[in-house]
Length: 123
Image (tube, rainbow, N blue to C red; front, side):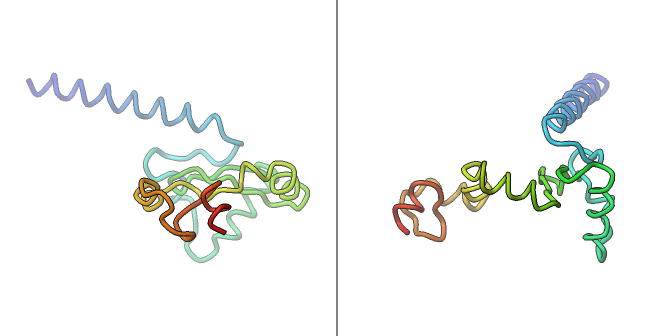
């Protein structure tokens, strides 16, 4: 019975890791993250900006870091302009999160909790 449970657990872990790295491949290149903690183990607590600068030299002006959620970092002005001006609709809303999920069930829950068309209407 215990060996069966261990087999199920091992199969789940393999499935989880496989899916994690499959999702990682969809983002711009960056340092290889670990499941669950992402790249947190590779960051210096005090000089985070220096580590991000080193990664920019390795991976280019647009790269992805997992904190543990994916964060796309843009370090050069031309790429920032392209992202925010030409593709501004992709960046117009607030990022999803547990708090916004709770308040999204309540329609018109205030300008501080809304985004998208609801935010524009309330503004």
